[in-house]
Amino acid sequence: MMKVDYIIVGAGLAGLCMARFCLKHNKSFVVIDHAERTSSKVAGGMFNPVVLKRFTSIWEAEAQIELADVFYPELEHLLNNSFYHKLPIYRKFASIEEQNNWFQACDNLVTAPFLNDQLYKSNFPFIKSEFNFGEVYKTGFLDVNSFVSAYQQYLKELGQLIELEFKYDDLKCFDDGVIYQHITAKQIVFAEGFSMQNNPYFNYLPLDGTKGELLYVRIPKLKLRSIVKSAVFIIPLGNDLYKVGATYNWQDKTDELTNTAYDELIEGLETLIDCEYEAVRHLAGIRPTVKDRRPLVGKHYQHKNIYILNGLGTRGVLLAPYLADKLIQNIENNVPLDRNIDVARYYKKLQLIK
Figure 1 (cartoon, rainbow, N blue to C red):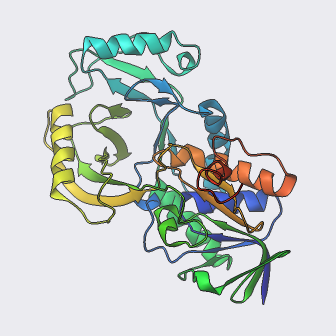
Figure 2: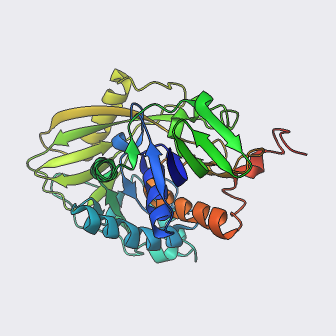
């Protein structure tokens, strides 16, 4: 019988960040994941402190970035890998109206620290913008696939990652912990992403997955060294390779590639750049999004040793370490969860508690 403090179900961004914070709190753990369906490995990975469509603020953006700037470099050092890249983002303006919205955001005390109030007028080679660009600070991208693959391999070598499908019927709950097959634990944390729909302990929650598709393209002439965001984003990965994304589909809940999304991405790319390119790879995944656009974090309404860490949506790079930190502080030190993320906000609405 294996004895640990935590069982973590799911080895995507959320689960791996939870594992890291268990280690920081000197708690033993094991991660269980069959890795068939995770949005992490097909994520765009871009992070920024403002909503680039409307130039509005993001909840706790400054605190999330401060943590990420320490968290990911620590893991780069541990794993002898490079996956956290600080790069500026330039938002291409499509109209005078967008410029005006930008300047309004530059006057807003919340968003002003992240925005350059001077228009960026230098044209990028092969990228034209009649209305110029806006520069966003404290931005970049995480090579999510490299991070997830490297950390999973590290945990596997330590015997802390079990690559098997989790069988919910085998979980037994007690007052002082849980037992799963040959493992006893004080707590279990479900960090399964969209696969939560199959979890009988949490499948009643309003997780409404959003399908996203993206492309890897080769563009030898572009020589871009920053991220550019227009109808699509384009992220330089090195060696003339770029990531282009992303689409949003609220109806399709499969991982199947679609011609519609492919055409949308190609159209967005061709509107943005004026040089030859080659599409190299097309990927799809389901983002774990919630109807109120807030994560699902906290304790089960009946079982005090069962927790959830989910609903990170499109901002998993910043939210995963931030929420994992908040959750383990809640469990170990009784630090209350912010009501914006606490899953308990749904229990009364769903008449699960009085």
